[in-house]
Structures are given as C-alpha cells and as structure tokens.
Image (tube, rainbow, N blue to C red; front, side, top):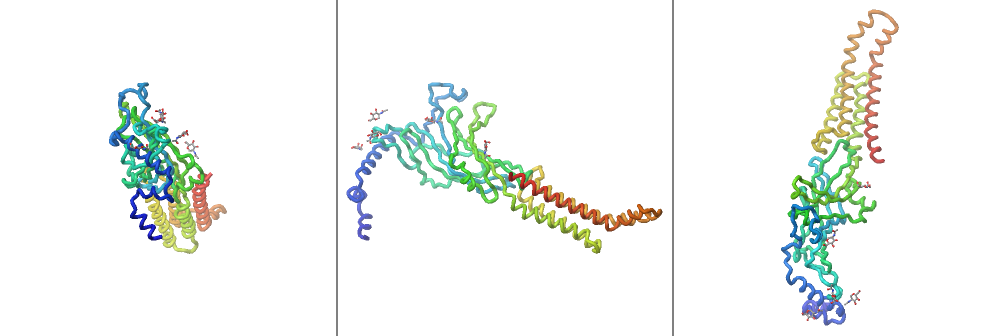
Length: 400
Ligand SMILES: *[C@@H]1O[C@H](CO)[C@@H](O)[C@H](O)[C@H]1NC(C)=O
Ligand SMILES: *[C@@H]1O[C@H](CO)[C@@H](O)[C@H](O)[C@H]1NC(C)=O
Ligand SMILES: *[C@@H]1O[C@H](CO)[C@@H](O)[C@H](O)[C@H]1NC(C)=O
Ligand SMILES: *[C@@H]1O[C@H](CO)[C@@H](O)[C@H](O)[C@H]1NC(C)=O
Ligand SMILES: *[C@@H]1O[C@H](CO)[C@@H](O)[C@H](O)[C@H]1NC(C)=O
C-alpha cells in the first residue's frame, strides 16, 4: 500500500496514462484536444487589450451606426446577498454579495465541431481580458479572492463567466423619523468606468431562486429583516451627453426588528414614569422627597434619550422614540409643577373662599386639598398609559 503511494509520487506524470486502472482513453483524447485548442485560440491573443468596439462617435446616440456590432455587454448576476451590518449614525450599510460576472470576448470563440465538440474550458483569470467589477459611490469594497485563485470559464461562443464574493459598504441615506419602527431603502450601484455609454452596456440580474421566502429570511440579520430586493439599470444623466453613465443598481428594503428598543427603552420608561407619578403624589411624604422622585425620573429619561441618540444619525427630524420619551418627560414636569403649586394655591385661595360661607365654596375648598392631587395623578397616569399604548400601536400597525 505504502509502496504504491511512493511509486505514484515518484513516477512521472505520463505514467498515469499507462496505468490501465486509472486510464480512460477518452480522457487523454480530451486533454490532447484541449491542449491543441488553447494553443490555437491563445496564439495571437493579448489579454491586456479589450474587445470593446471603439469605432463609434461618442457624441451620437446609441445604435446610430447599424453596421456596427451591438454594444459590448457586461452582466452582473446576483447569486446571494447577506446583510452584515447597518451603522445608522454613519448612514452606512455593509452587505456581502455573491456575484457572477459575465461578458463576451469574440476573440475567444471557436468552432466546437472542429474541436470534437469541446464547448468549455476552465482556466486562470489573468490569462484573459476581463472587465473589473467596480462599484459606484461606495465607501469600501473588499474582494475576498486572492489574485492567484481567480478562475473563469470560457465557452465556445466567447461567453466568459467568473464568480466573485465581495463585501460592499455603501452609503445610504436613512430616514429615522419612525425609529424604532423604521424601514430603510439602500442601493448598491455598479458601473463600468472609463468606457463610454455608447460602447458598453451594463446589465444586472438576480438569481430567481433567491427571491423565495425561505431564502429571503436568511439574508437579513437579527436586527434587520430583508423585505425586498430589486434590480434595475439607471442612467446617471448629466447635461452633457458625454458624461452620462449607466449604473446597475441593486436595491434592498430592510425593516428593523423593534423588540430590542421596546424592552430596553419603551417599556422601562413607561414603568418608571408610572411609578414616579405615584411617588410624586404620595400621601404623607414631605414635599422635598416628592420633588426628589420627580427629578430622579427626569434624569433617567434624559439618560435614556442619550442612549437613543447614539443609535441614530444627527438629522433634522425627531424619531418616534424621542417623541415618546419627551412626552413622558413633559408629563413628569407637569406632575412636579402641580405638586409645587398646589400648596401655594391653597394658601392663596383659602382665605378668599372663607370670606363668604356657601356650600359651593366649602366644597371647592376641600377639593383644593387631597382630591385635586388624586385627580391630577389619575389624569397623568392615564396620559402615561395612552402614550405607551400609542407607541406600541405603531408596532402592530407596522406588522400588518
Ligand atoms: C494536436 O496537435 C498536434 C501537433 O500539431 C497533432 O499532432 C495532434 O494530432 C493534435 N491532436 C488533436 C487531438 O487534434
Ligand atoms: C451581449 O452580447 C452578446 C455578444 O455580442 C450577444 O450575443 C448578446 O445577445 C448580448 N446580450 C444582450 C442582453 O444584449
Ligand atoms: C466547423 O467545423 C466543422 C468540422 O470541421 C465544419 O464542417 C464546419 O463547416 C465548421 N463551421 C464553421 C462555421 O466554420
Ligand atoms: C459532436 O456532436 C454532434 C451532434 O451532437 C455529433 O453528431 C458528433 O458525432 C459529435 N462529434 C464528436 C467528435 O463527438
Ligand atoms: C418589491 O418591489 C417591487 C418593485 O418596487 C414590487 O413590484 C414588489 O411587489 C415588491 N415585493 C414585495 C414583496 O414587497
């Protein structure tokens, strides 16, 4: 056994063909034909020169010359996409894209029946000319492949394809006015730089199978869910025709899972507010400790606002969550104001009410004490509850 391995290692490669166990005659024929074929097609081939047809006048509209070939086309085919992260303060998203690129090179085509029906060859990418994948207006693109490991497939029609796995970090303007129930739309744009639009045509496609619900679920992350994925080609138009460029756009729609913010911010601040109002109006406590409860609550709310501020870009509009906390803050301020004012009010009103003795005035005077506090407490508690319910209501509205 060991001897067999040793002899296999030290035997020249040719011996492969003389071992009747390993040798299938058809295999040797294939290798012979492939060797002659590659020698034939690469005889005069220069991989540094592109096959793009340039006998065109770049100032005239596309297709003005009907003897010229169609525009050179290059397609980006999205095979899979994975959302890696969303950085709201920087308004950036990162996605990993599994892409197949394909294009045609007329110089690398052959008559298959003259070469025993050989229709495809796999080889190293650096031996052929290839358009490099370029993204438009992004922060960062990382190609995970090593330069030495890039492979392509050439078909006899001149059709060439390869496979790229890239991480793209794109800028994406975010609208956080409905935060944490927000939905964002982001674009990743590809282009063919340096060529004129009348010479090249960029196309994009999405693998149909990934539009399936089951696969879609795996493309988001735990905070964001992918809602939609679309593709289109759009021209970036400038006033002068020459600078116009086609952009192949992949657009994703993502929605945030708000549960984290519900249990980290919305629910705790509801409880704190609810309990603090009870504390502020607590029977028997002295005024100072009631004020303390109120002020502590205000500090907590301000702190929670700070936590939220770290998660959103510094834009002009206040997010829903911010409005919710500010309303809670205002409710607490009203509570403090009532508690402070009520004793003063009583001091000021009692002598006036006692001047005349009527039933109404007596009733009014007794109402100015405890009953007024209880009524305000109940109203404020109801406001707190309503605020909470409206906030949670947005969640359910969003789900439907
Ligand atoms: C490959 O080319 C060699 C040399 O030109 C020739 O002798 C041989 O027959 C060719 N083989 C095939 C399978 O075409
Ligand atoms: C792309 O170019 C090839 C070869 O020039 C042509 O056969 C093919 O139809 C073109 N595809 C599109 C979508 O224009
Ligand atoms: C392709 O090769 C076959 C076999 O050599 C030949 O009969 C046929 O005419 C060739 N076709 C073209 C388009 O050259
Ligand atoms: C090539 O394919 C054609 C059609 O399928 C077949 O008739 C022919 O025998 C094949 N030639 C070789 C060398 O396999
Ligand atoms: C995705 O967006 C396209 C284009 O806007 C729309 O036609 C399609 O209905 C959307 N799909 C879903 C699942 O929302």
